[in-house]
Image (cartoon, rainbow, N blue to C red):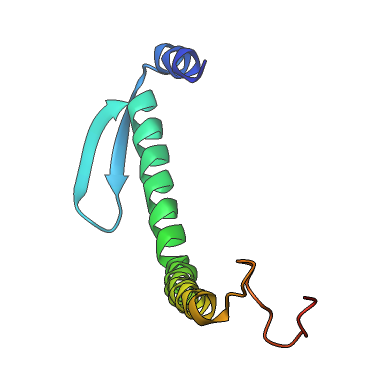
Length: 103
Protein backbone atom coordinates (compact mmCIF):
# COMPACT_ATOMS: atom_id res chain seq x y z
CA UNK A 1 0.00 0.00 0.00
CA UNK A 2 2.77 2.43 0.91
CA UNK A 3 4.67 1.53 -2.28
CA UNK A 4 1.59 2.36 -4.34
CA UNK A 5 1.21 5.72 -2.60
CA UNK A 6 4.90 6.54 -3.09
CA UNK A 7 4.71 5.60 -6.77
CA UNK A 8 1.62 7.78 -7.23
CA UNK A 9 3.37 10.67 -5.44
CA UNK A 10 6.44 10.29 -7.67
CA UNK A 11 4.39 10.21 -10.88
CA UNK A 12 2.31 13.21 -9.82
CA UNK A 13 5.29 15.40 -8.81
CA UNK A 14 7.80 15.07 -11.64
CA UNK A 15 8.39 18.79 -12.24
CA UNK A 16 11.97 19.99 -11.71
CA UNK A 17 12.84 22.17 -8.73
CA UNK A 18 16.03 23.95 -7.76
CA UNK A 19 17.34 23.05 -4.31
CA UNK A 20 19.59 25.53 -2.48
CA UNK A 21 21.36 25.00 0.83
CA UNK A 22 21.62 28.45 2.35
CA UNK A 23 24.22 29.75 3.48
CA UNK A 24 26.30 27.19 1.59
CA UNK A 25 27.01 27.88 -2.08
CA UNK A 26 25.40 24.57 -3.06
CA UNK A 27 22.46 24.43 -5.42
CA UNK A 28 21.22 21.79 -7.83
CA UNK A 29 18.16 20.88 -9.85
CA UNK A 30 16.17 17.70 -9.21
CA UNK A 31 12.64 16.36 -9.43
CA UNK A 32 10.20 17.50 -6.73
CA UNK A 33 9.33 13.98 -5.57
CA UNK A 34 13.01 13.14 -5.09
CA UNK A 35 13.63 16.27 -2.99
CA UNK A 36 10.58 15.57 -0.81
CA UNK A 37 11.31 11.87 -0.30
CA UNK A 38 14.99 12.45 0.49
CA UNK A 39 14.04 15.19 2.96
CA UNK A 40 11.51 12.90 4.64
CA UNK A 41 14.02 10.04 4.86
CA UNK A 42 16.67 12.37 6.29
CA UNK A 43 14.19 13.67 8.89
CA UNK A 44 13.19 10.13 9.85
CA UNK A 45 16.80 9.01 10.28
CA UNK A 46 17.65 12.14 12.28
CA UNK A 47 14.63 11.57 14.53
CA UNK A 48 15.58 7.92 15.08
CA UNK A 49 19.12 8.94 16.08
CA UNK A 50 17.80 11.47 18.57
CA UNK A 51 15.43 8.87 20.05
CA UNK A 52 18.22 6.27 20.22
CA UNK A 53 20.57 8.64 22.04
CA UNK A 54 17.72 9.71 24.32
CA UNK A 55 17.02 6.09 25.28
CA UNK A 56 20.64 5.43 26.25
CA UNK A 57 19.94 5.98 29.94
CA UNK A 58 17.02 3.54 29.93
CA UNK A 59 19.00 0.85 28.10
CA UNK A 60 21.84 1.23 30.61
CA UNK A 61 19.40 0.93 33.52
CA UNK A 62 17.88 -2.22 32.00
CA UNK A 63 21.34 -3.78 31.59
CA UNK A 64 22.21 -3.01 35.22
CA UNK A 65 18.92 -4.45 36.49
CA UNK A 66 19.34 -7.55 34.32
CA UNK A 67 22.77 -8.17 35.83
CA UNK A 68 21.32 -7.72 39.32
CA UNK A 69 18.50 -10.17 38.55
CA UNK A 70 20.99 -12.75 37.25
CA UNK A 71 23.15 -12.36 40.37
CA UNK A 72 20.11 -12.75 42.65
CA UNK A 73 18.95 -15.83 40.73
CA UNK A 74 22.40 -17.42 41.12
CA UNK A 75 22.36 -16.59 44.83
CA UNK A 76 18.86 -18.06 45.20
CA UNK A 77 19.85 -21.26 43.39
CA UNK A 78 22.94 -21.64 45.60
CA UNK A 79 20.88 -21.04 48.75
CA UNK A 80 18.22 -23.53 47.67
CA UNK A 81 20.90 -26.14 46.90
CA UNK A 82 22.50 -25.52 50.30
CA UNK A 83 19.18 -25.83 52.13
CA UNK A 84 18.13 -28.93 50.20
CA UNK A 85 21.15 -31.06 51.13
CA UNK A 86 21.25 -30.88 54.94
CA UNK A 87 17.61 -29.94 55.47
CA UNK A 88 15.88 -33.02 54.04
CA UNK A 89 13.78 -35.06 56.45
CA UNK A 90 13.34 -38.84 56.48
CA UNK A 91 10.28 -38.55 54.21
CA UNK A 92 12.26 -36.75 51.54
CA UNK A 93 10.38 -33.47 51.88
CA UNK A 94 12.43 -30.40 52.67
CA UNK A 95 11.97 -29.06 56.14
CA UNK A 96 11.13 -25.38 56.60
CA UNK A 97 13.65 -23.81 58.94
CA UNK A 98 11.14 -21.80 61.00
CA UNK A 99 8.29 -24.30 61.29
CA UNK A 100 8.10 -27.32 63.62
CA UNK A 101 7.99 -30.78 62.07
CA UNK A 102 4.55 -32.45 61.78
CA UNK A 103 5.92 -36.03 62.05
